[in-house]
Each structure stands twice: as structure tokens, then as C-alpha cells.
Image (cartoon, rainbow, N blue to C red; front, side, top):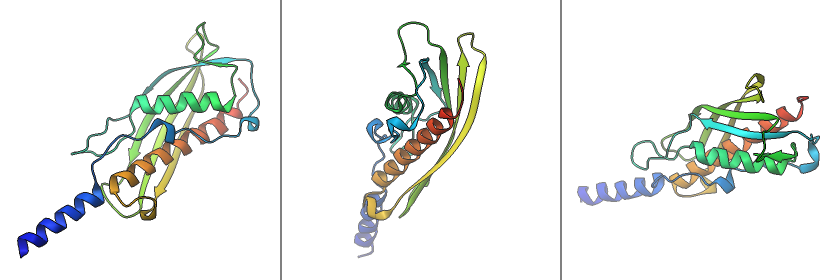
Length: 177
């Protein structure tokens, strides 16, 4: 009887934690009102995103990786309408780099809160740094958002990225480039 209880408890924990999978780029796109920002005729290219981590379903769970973050950043920049072109074929006026400094997340839980800390750097054509901002964001996915723990963790990761990029765009829109 104890073995059946142990197996049942193990299965329940596996369902609650679930297998980790990577957050979706489409769910990480910042929600911005296009008319909210003042458009510039300048161009910008996303040079690099680094500091992210690959998801590992067994050891580390769902993580925010560089490629997914870059995809969400590119689409969000395009949707914001801040610049005339994003990643132009010719030499851009500015380069953007983003470094994921930390991503803190729970291993398991009912409500899952992810904290994301990203440093954004804008540099000119000559690679001289023009602007830098560290953005901290948090997002909590509640138990009611998803029954499976891995899904809640992904929702929390996606929300933390969405919020971080939104805050970045708001800060960037205040800068005269």
C-alpha cells in the first residue's frame, strides 16, 4: 500500500512540476501602443543578446534563452514603431545589445514568480556607448493560470520578458537619440 501511495505522490508531483519546455517567442512580445512613442527616422540593429540559458527539462527547467529573447525583442521593437527600420541591410544608425544578467525562478510551486534583470546598451556606428539601462521585471503566473507547473513557469518566464521589454521600450522612448 505504501508503494502505491509513493507512486501516486510521485505521479502527482510530476504532473504539478511537469516537463520543462522553452517559452514561446510569440508570448514574449511586449504589448505596446504604436502611437505611444515618438518615431525617429533613425535605424537600429540588434547586435547581440547574451546571458540567456537553454531550457533543460531534467535539471534546470524552463529558461529564457538568447535566441527567443532576441526574437521577442526584434518583434517588439518593430511593433513599437520607434525607429524607421530594424536590422536594416545598410549600416544602421545605432546598435542594440542586451545582456540577461539574471533570471530567478522557482523550481516548483503553486504561484510561480520569475524575476528578470536585463542590461540594454545602445551604441553608435563607431561602437561608442550612447545609452545603457538595467531593467528589472517580475511576473507571477498563478495556479489558476495553468494546472501543470511547467506551463505556469513558462507563462511566468514569458510575462517577465514581455514586461522587461515593455519597460525598456518606455525608457528608450524618453531618450533623444
